[in-house]
Picture: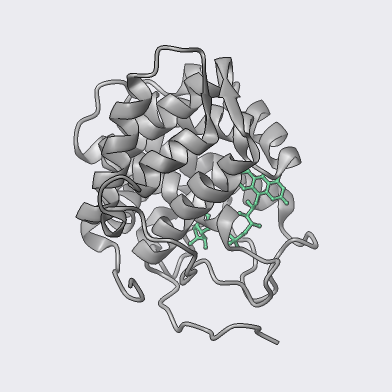
Length: 258
Ligand code: FAD
């Protein structure tokens, strides 16, 4: 049974409603469990917000909120901040709350068949795929900027602690492998598939959304190839162009936004 109204969606598309919902969950719920953010965690938050302010392909009201958060954070000289102070800037309480990040979650492409399936973790993956693709499309300067922000955000704040540990182990291999912006896009895709492979069939899997090696041959026939010995192999050039278009800002659907 589905407890809230199901929002029909296209499984092969990315929705802005999921990205904004993830930002709301991350910035207003996940971070709120850290009343004081200091030292390494504060550095991590600064990197995360800076990457969002640079690459999140958001609506003007959302970008406004991310940019004021970023300039406020970068100006903090103390080695700790209070979450409450951060939240005031986020909600833009002093000026015009209607120009801030919308309140609440509205999952669309990340809906699950039960409330404990999908949602925020699905949104986090989607968000960081979009950010690596945006950095590549807009010519970011440091190939590891987005991934190292993701790595430290997950390490310091992601609520699923065993997920964070697994991810930290994988991310340890990242520096040597990621030497260009396209390599960062492919690294995240391939790491996500490793996670899909590891947890396929687990209790956390939504039966309506089985874990696959993604994208499926239906979504991207050209991504799939066969080696001489008959084994499957990925055509990485095709995967990169598929990811570049799938997660590009111009492909993101704006259905179900307020
Ligand atoms: P998700 O895996 O969340 O993917 C979201 C969407 O991204 C998919 O619907 C699909 O459209 C697309 N997608 C799928 N694969 C790829 C790919 N390779 N590249 C690009 N896009 C893709 N759960 C655990 O049980 N154990 C863990 O150790 C664990 N570690 C995690 C680590 C991180 C960093 C994160 C963000 C989540 C982790 N999770 C873990 C949660 C798990 O990966 C899923 O997010 C969750 O089970 C929901 O799955 P989903 O069906 O919504 O698809």
